Image (tube, rainbow, N blue to C red):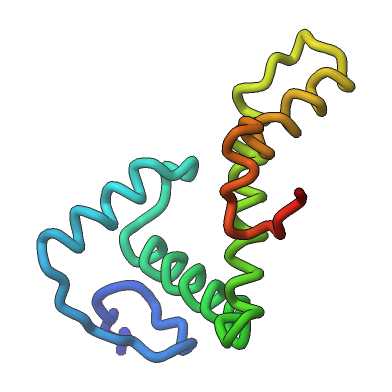
Length: 125
């Protein structure tokens, strides 16, 4: 007697299957994220797992930092980093490293007439 073959792929026996309904706008956003990915073999299921992992990692990394002053300081530091990255992208790479640093410092500090009205720095008169 020949055993009857089962339909579908062999079960892995790992993990718990979770079914979820998605709205068309959410699926469009996921599909857009997949299209912008470097991995062209990425399926929706794998993309959703990656997005969940990214969301959980960000939540874990940022937990506890949003309380009181520490959260504001972290936000300021993040803003500084983003500004520095933006400046680095448009920097003149043909200039000497010293000139690049000087130009970046001038951009970050801002014009002299505005430096006196900044609220985040003590009055230096």
